Image (cartoon, rainbow, N blue to C red):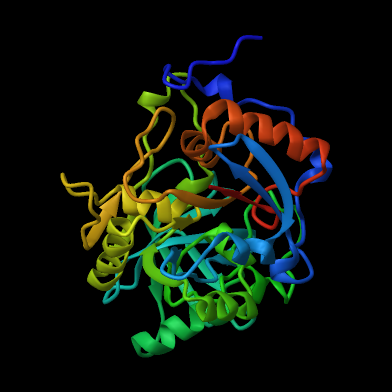
Length: 358
């Protein structure tokens, strides 16, 4: 089969492949940085098999790792519908209005949840919510009714909420997920899904990188559920991403621009970080500090302006995450690496192994 031209217009079906079910990671590696790391060198077109902690061998003093410091909040709650007592899953997407305790949520099963219905949460029904609007087939606006301060209300949500493991991890949430479905550098609460490439970093590895003189540029993209939205159009230019909130601090932009001038290795840790920086590039190809929203969708062909390396997990067929990896590593090379990954039994998805593209 002839090689696809790297610059030709990609279609959804180009990203189809057969993923054996047993390669979907249901649990994380026992130790964060002991997961496997496949290293793709774009210049030599070579593939190496390493451990994640070997990452340190690819970075030197003055290089920069760009990290997404968003923090996942326990967005999945279970309530009971008034009168019938039916168990309803409520997934908190975002707070619309703090004062009125209005939230944008998804409900499941959705067909019985109508405007005016009340939902009760907690053993003692200590939290009640009223459905005040329909937004999409599963989307609703809820108003929470709670006697107490805003701080007490948020504490109640934390107490009643569960770690929002993606649906692809088909098991009950366990105690260790609270810690493992969170990066160790998570700071700003607001994501409903973890930026998964960052999950592989241990305190020890970060310390070793720091001692070596590698710099960390933190930024924030609050990952929304849109990260799991399937692409439903064959023509990728017609796909619309959900908007997500991003923050690039001035200090991070300065650090990255300095490293760029000095021709250092600048690594996007994860697809969310890559989308964040690609959303705020100046006409001089420098990174601008920014606070706002992005709905950037990166698919081949794409000219990258900031990062010259990236870390990402192994992704599901036809996902926007795979498309971005292919745009960065080169379509043929990345798809070839995925064949190797399946043959070598790399673990896929959120709790799976990682890939470094240099």
